[in-house]
Length: 280
Ligand code: C2E
Ligand code: MG
Ligand code: MG
Ligand code: MG
Image (spheres, rainbow, N blue to C red):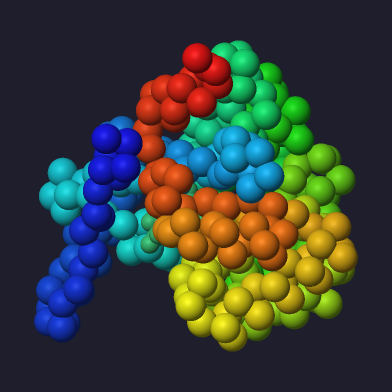
Protein backbone atom coordinates (compact mmCIF):
# COMPACT_ATOMS: atom_id res chain seq x y z
CA UNK A 1 0.00 0.00 0.00
CA UNK A 2 0.97 3.63 -0.39
CA UNK A 3 1.66 3.90 3.31
CA UNK A 4 4.32 1.21 3.29
CA UNK A 5 6.13 2.40 0.17
CA UNK A 6 8.39 4.79 2.02
CA UNK A 7 9.68 2.27 4.54
CA UNK A 8 11.95 3.11 7.44
CA UNK A 9 15.25 4.62 6.30
CA UNK A 10 18.47 3.29 7.73
CA UNK A 11 20.02 5.47 10.40
CA UNK A 12 23.44 5.19 11.92
CA UNK A 13 22.74 4.54 15.57
CA UNK A 14 26.03 3.27 16.89
CA UNK A 15 28.14 4.12 19.88
CA UNK A 16 31.29 2.93 18.08
CA UNK A 17 33.24 6.02 16.99
CA UNK A 18 35.25 4.17 14.31
CA UNK A 19 32.05 2.98 12.72
CA UNK A 20 30.59 6.47 12.84
CA UNK A 21 33.67 7.95 11.16
CA UNK A 22 33.84 5.18 8.56
CA UNK A 23 30.16 5.63 7.75
CA UNK A 24 30.68 9.35 7.30
CA UNK A 25 33.61 8.76 4.95
CA UNK A 26 31.61 6.18 2.99
CA UNK A 27 28.64 8.55 2.90
CA UNK A 28 30.74 11.47 1.71
CA UNK A 29 32.41 9.62 -1.16
CA UNK A 30 29.09 8.01 -2.08
CA UNK A 31 27.29 11.36 -2.15
CA UNK A 32 29.87 12.94 -4.45
CA UNK A 33 28.89 10.46 -7.21
CA UNK A 34 25.26 9.85 -6.31
CA UNK A 35 23.78 12.48 -8.63
CA UNK A 36 25.57 11.30 -11.79
CA UNK A 37 24.77 7.69 -10.87
CA UNK A 38 21.07 8.44 -10.57
CA UNK A 39 20.80 7.32 -6.94
CA UNK A 40 18.55 10.19 -5.84
CA UNK A 41 14.80 10.26 -6.16
CA UNK A 42 11.94 12.35 -4.85
CA UNK A 43 8.87 11.26 -2.95
CA UNK A 44 5.88 13.53 -2.37
CA UNK A 45 3.86 13.95 0.79
CA UNK A 46 0.36 15.44 0.35
CA UNK A 47 -0.95 18.40 2.35
CA UNK A 48 -4.68 18.31 3.10
CA UNK A 49 -7.05 21.26 3.46
CA UNK A 50 -8.83 20.80 6.79
CA UNK A 51 -12.04 22.51 5.63
CA UNK A 52 -12.56 20.52 2.45
CA UNK A 53 -10.43 17.42 3.17
CA UNK A 54 -8.88 17.66 -0.29
CA UNK A 55 -5.23 17.59 -1.29
CA UNK A 56 -4.13 21.21 -1.67
CA UNK A 57 -0.40 20.67 -2.03
CA UNK A 58 2.51 18.34 -1.65
CA UNK A 59 6.08 18.48 -0.40
CA UNK A 60 8.97 16.98 -2.34
CA UNK A 61 11.31 14.98 -0.09
CA UNK A 62 14.71 13.74 -1.22
CA UNK A 63 15.64 10.06 -1.04
CA UNK A 64 19.08 8.50 -1.51
CA UNK A 65 19.59 4.83 -2.20
CA UNK A 66 23.31 4.11 -1.88
CA UNK A 67 24.63 0.86 -3.40
CA UNK A 68 26.89 0.48 -0.33
CA UNK A 69 24.77 1.92 2.49
CA UNK A 70 21.22 1.18 1.35
CA UNK A 71 18.52 3.77 1.98
CA UNK A 72 20.00 6.64 3.95
CA UNK A 73 17.79 9.13 5.82
CA UNK A 74 17.94 12.77 4.68
CA UNK A 75 18.41 13.63 8.36
CA UNK A 76 21.82 11.95 7.96
CA UNK A 77 22.86 12.91 4.43
CA UNK A 78 21.44 16.44 4.01
CA UNK A 79 23.83 17.86 6.66
CA UNK A 80 26.66 16.13 4.77
CA UNK A 81 25.51 17.72 1.49
CA UNK A 82 25.48 21.08 3.23
CA UNK A 83 28.97 20.67 4.66
CA UNK A 84 30.49 19.60 1.35
CA UNK A 85 28.65 22.22 -0.70
CA UNK A 86 27.07 19.47 -2.83
CA UNK A 87 23.68 20.79 -1.70
CA UNK A 88 23.78 23.47 -4.39
CA UNK A 89 23.97 21.07 -7.36
CA UNK A 90 21.68 18.49 -5.77
CA UNK A 91 19.28 21.17 -4.54
CA UNK A 92 18.92 22.41 -8.12
CA UNK A 93 18.23 18.85 -9.27
CA UNK A 94 15.55 18.58 -6.58
CA UNK A 95 14.01 21.89 -7.65
CA UNK A 96 13.96 21.00 -11.34
CA UNK A 97 12.56 17.51 -10.69
CA UNK A 98 9.84 18.90 -8.42
CA UNK A 99 9.00 21.62 -10.97
CA UNK A 100 8.63 19.00 -13.69
CA UNK A 101 6.25 17.12 -11.38
CA UNK A 102 4.26 20.31 -10.77
CA UNK A 103 4.06 20.78 -14.57
CA UNK A 104 2.70 17.22 -14.89
CA UNK A 105 0.15 17.85 -12.11
CA UNK A 106 -1.12 20.96 -13.92
CA UNK A 107 -1.30 19.07 -17.22
CA UNK A 108 -3.33 16.31 -15.54
CA UNK A 109 -5.84 18.81 -14.15
CA UNK A 110 -4.45 19.05 -10.62
CA UNK A 111 -3.41 22.69 -10.78
CA UNK A 112 -4.65 23.28 -7.22
CA UNK A 113 -1.98 20.95 -5.84
CA UNK A 114 0.89 23.28 -4.94
CA UNK A 115 4.47 21.97 -4.96
CA UNK A 116 6.79 22.68 -2.06
CA UNK A 117 10.55 22.13 -2.00
CA UNK A 118 12.86 22.27 1.02
CA UNK A 119 15.64 24.82 0.78
CA UNK A 120 18.88 24.72 2.78
CA UNK A 121 20.45 27.86 4.13
CA UNK A 122 23.51 27.12 1.96
CA UNK A 123 21.32 27.44 -1.13
CA UNK A 124 20.11 30.91 -0.21
CA UNK A 125 22.73 32.93 -2.10
CA UNK A 126 22.54 35.41 -5.01
CA UNK A 127 23.17 32.73 -7.68
CA UNK A 128 20.04 30.88 -6.57
CA UNK A 129 17.65 33.45 -8.09
CA UNK A 130 18.81 33.17 -11.73
CA UNK A 131 19.06 29.38 -11.35
CA UNK A 132 15.46 29.26 -10.11
CA UNK A 133 14.24 31.53 -12.93
CA UNK A 134 15.98 29.29 -15.50
CA UNK A 135 14.33 26.17 -14.02
CA UNK A 136 10.89 27.83 -14.06
CA UNK A 137 11.43 28.79 -17.69
CA UNK A 138 12.52 25.27 -18.67
CA UNK A 139 9.52 23.70 -16.95
CA UNK A 140 7.00 26.32 -18.09
CA UNK A 141 6.01 27.41 -14.59
CA UNK A 142 5.28 30.71 -12.90
CA UNK A 143 7.01 31.63 -9.61
CA UNK A 144 3.72 31.23 -7.75
CA UNK A 145 3.52 27.59 -8.86
CA UNK A 146 6.07 26.68 -6.23
CA UNK A 147 6.68 27.08 -2.54
CA UNK A 148 10.02 27.00 -0.75
CA UNK A 149 10.23 25.61 2.80
CA UNK A 150 12.90 27.18 4.95
CA UNK A 151 13.65 25.90 8.44
CA UNK A 152 13.35 28.18 11.40
CA UNK A 153 17.10 27.95 12.12
CA UNK A 154 17.79 29.74 8.83
CA UNK A 155 16.01 32.85 10.03
CA UNK A 156 17.81 32.65 13.34
CA UNK A 157 21.05 33.35 11.50
CA UNK A 158 19.69 36.88 11.29
CA UNK A 159 21.71 37.56 8.17
CA UNK A 160 20.77 40.67 6.24
CA UNK A 161 21.74 38.95 3.00
CA UNK A 162 19.36 36.05 3.61
CA UNK A 163 16.45 38.35 4.45
CA UNK A 164 17.17 40.36 1.29
CA UNK A 165 17.20 37.23 -0.87
CA UNK A 166 13.98 35.96 0.72
CA UNK A 167 12.39 39.32 -0.06
CA UNK A 168 13.54 39.04 -3.69
CA UNK A 169 12.01 35.56 -3.91
CA UNK A 170 8.76 36.82 -2.40
CA UNK A 171 8.73 39.78 -4.82
CA UNK A 172 9.05 37.33 -7.71
CA UNK A 173 5.88 35.64 -6.44
CA UNK A 174 7.41 32.49 -4.97
CA UNK A 175 5.53 31.25 -1.89
CA UNK A 176 7.66 30.94 1.23
CA UNK A 177 6.96 28.68 4.20
CA UNK A 178 8.63 28.55 7.58
CA UNK A 179 9.39 24.88 8.29
CA UNK A 180 9.63 23.17 11.71
CA UNK A 181 8.23 26.14 13.64
CA UNK A 182 8.54 25.55 17.36
CA UNK A 183 11.94 23.86 17.27
CA UNK A 184 13.94 27.09 17.40
CA UNK A 185 13.48 30.26 19.34
CA UNK A 186 12.17 32.70 16.78
CA UNK A 187 9.22 34.75 17.97
CA UNK A 188 6.09 35.39 15.99
CA UNK A 189 6.93 39.10 16.19
CA UNK A 190 10.11 38.36 14.26
CA UNK A 191 8.26 36.24 11.74
CA UNK A 192 5.93 39.17 11.13
CA UNK A 193 8.79 41.04 9.47
CA UNK A 194 9.56 38.12 7.15
CA UNK A 195 7.92 37.64 3.74
CA UNK A 196 6.41 34.28 4.73
CA UNK A 197 3.01 33.06 3.55
CA UNK A 198 2.89 29.91 5.61
CA UNK A 199 3.97 28.62 9.01
CA UNK A 200 4.45 24.87 9.42
CA UNK A 201 4.15 23.80 13.05
CA UNK A 202 6.72 21.12 13.88
CA UNK A 203 5.64 17.56 14.65
CA UNK A 204 7.11 17.82 18.16
CA UNK A 205 4.37 20.31 19.08
CA UNK A 206 1.62 18.29 17.37
CA UNK A 207 2.35 14.86 18.90
CA UNK A 208 0.75 15.52 22.31
CA UNK A 209 -1.82 18.06 21.16
CA UNK A 210 -4.78 15.81 21.99
CA UNK A 211 -3.38 14.74 25.38
CA UNK A 212 -1.06 17.46 26.62
CA UNK A 213 -2.88 20.65 27.56
CA UNK A 214 0.26 22.78 27.38
CA UNK A 215 1.20 21.92 23.80
CA UNK A 216 -2.40 22.45 22.74
CA UNK A 217 -2.32 25.97 24.19
CA UNK A 218 0.96 26.75 22.40
CA UNK A 219 -0.44 25.51 19.10
CA UNK A 220 -3.62 27.54 19.66
CA UNK A 221 -1.50 30.66 20.21
CA UNK A 222 0.60 30.01 17.10
CA UNK A 223 -2.52 29.50 14.96
CA UNK A 224 -4.30 32.61 16.32
CA UNK A 225 -1.27 34.88 16.05
CA UNK A 226 -0.32 33.44 12.66
CA UNK A 227 -3.82 34.14 11.37
CA UNK A 228 -3.73 37.68 12.73
CA UNK A 229 -0.65 38.13 10.53
CA UNK A 230 -2.49 36.56 7.55
CA UNK A 231 -0.27 33.49 7.54
CA UNK A 232 -1.54 30.08 6.55
CA UNK A 233 -0.92 27.40 9.19
CA UNK A 234 0.07 23.82 8.41
CA UNK A 235 0.41 21.15 11.11
CA UNK A 236 3.23 18.66 10.45
CA UNK A 237 3.41 15.00 11.48
CA UNK A 238 -0.31 14.43 12.06
CA UNK A 239 -0.78 10.74 12.88
CA UNK A 240 -4.17 10.40 14.63
CA UNK A 241 -7.82 11.33 14.11
CA UNK A 242 -7.78 12.92 17.57
CA UNK A 243 -5.07 15.33 16.44
CA UNK A 244 -7.13 16.19 13.35
CA UNK A 245 -10.24 16.89 15.43
CA UNK A 246 -8.23 19.08 17.75
CA UNK A 247 -6.53 21.00 14.94
CA UNK A 248 -9.91 21.56 13.31
CA UNK A 249 -11.27 23.06 16.52
CA UNK A 250 -8.23 25.33 16.72
CA UNK A 251 -8.82 26.57 13.18
CA UNK A 252 -5.67 25.12 11.59
CA UNK A 253 -5.70 25.43 7.78
CA UNK A 254 -3.87 22.34 6.56
CA UNK A 255 -2.41 19.10 7.84
CA UNK A 256 0.36 16.82 6.67
CA UNK A 257 1.28 13.47 8.17
CA UNK A 258 1.22 9.70 8.08
CA UNK A 259 -2.51 9.64 8.95
CA UNK A 260 -3.41 10.87 5.48
CA UNK A 261 -0.35 9.66 3.60
CA UNK A 262 3.33 8.94 3.92
CA UNK A 263 5.61 10.47 1.31
CA UNK A 264 4.93 8.49 -1.90
CA UNK A 265 6.53 8.22 -5.36
CA UNK A 266 5.19 10.49 -8.13
CA UNK A 267 3.08 7.84 -9.91
CA UNK A 268 1.37 6.93 -6.61
CA UNK A 269 0.61 10.59 -5.96
CA UNK A 270 -1.12 10.81 -9.34
CA UNK A 271 -3.13 7.67 -8.54
CA UNK A 272 -4.11 9.07 -5.14
CA UNK A 273 -5.23 12.36 -6.73
CA UNK A 274 -7.15 10.56 -9.48
CA UNK A 275 -8.94 8.42 -6.89
CA UNK A 276 -9.95 11.43 -4.84
CA UNK A 277 -11.02 13.38 -7.91
CA UNK A 278 -13.49 10.81 -9.24
CA UNK A 279 -16.87 11.19 -7.46
CA UNK A 280 -18.20 7.72 -8.32
P1 C2E B 1 10.87 18.35 6.86
O1 C2E B 1 10.99 19.23 5.66
O2 C2E B 1 10.35 18.97 8.10
O3 C2E B 1 9.97 17.12 6.41
C1 C2E B 1 9.11 16.41 7.26
C2 C2E B 1 9.70 15.08 7.68
O4 C2E B 1 8.80 14.42 8.57
C3 C2E B 1 9.92 14.10 6.52
O5 C2E B 1 11.04 13.29 6.87
C4 C2E B 1 8.65 13.28 6.55
O6 C2E B 1 8.79 12.00 5.95
C5 C2E B 1 8.42 13.17 8.03
N1 C2E B 1 7.01 12.97 8.36
C6 C2E B 1 5.92 13.41 7.71
N2 C2E B 1 4.78 13.05 8.34
C7 C2E B 1 5.15 12.37 9.44
C8 C2E B 1 4.42 11.74 10.50
O7 C2E B 1 3.19 11.74 10.56
N3 C2E B 1 5.15 11.13 11.48
C9 C2E B 1 6.52 11.10 11.45
N4 C2E B 1 7.14 10.47 12.44
N5 C2E B 1 7.24 11.70 10.47
C10 C2E B 1 6.56 12.32 9.48
P2 C2E B 1 12.22 13.01 5.83
O8 C2E B 1 11.67 12.81 4.46
O9 C2E B 1 13.05 11.94 6.44
O10 C2E B 1 13.03 14.37 5.81
C11 C2E B 1 13.67 14.87 6.95
C12 C2E B 1 14.18 16.27 6.71
O11 C2E B 1 15.23 16.26 5.74
C13 C2E B 1 13.13 17.23 6.17
O12 C2E B 1 12.31 17.71 7.23
C14 C2E B 1 14.01 18.30 5.57
O13 C2E B 1 14.46 19.19 6.56
C15 C2E B 1 15.19 17.49 5.06
N6 C2E B 1 15.03 17.28 3.60
C16 C2E B 1 14.34 16.32 2.94
N7 C2E B 1 14.42 16.50 1.60
C17 C2E B 1 15.18 17.62 1.41
C18 C2E B 1 15.63 18.34 0.24
O14 C2E B 1 15.30 18.03 -0.92
N8 C2E B 1 16.42 19.44 0.47
C19 C2E B 1 16.76 19.83 1.73
N9 C2E B 1 17.54 20.92 1.85
N10 C2E B 1 16.35 19.20 2.83
C20 C2E B 1 15.57 18.10 2.68
MG1 MG C 1 9.75 20.63 4.85
MG1 MG D 1 9.21 20.20 8.91
MG1 MG E 1 12.64 19.16 9.30
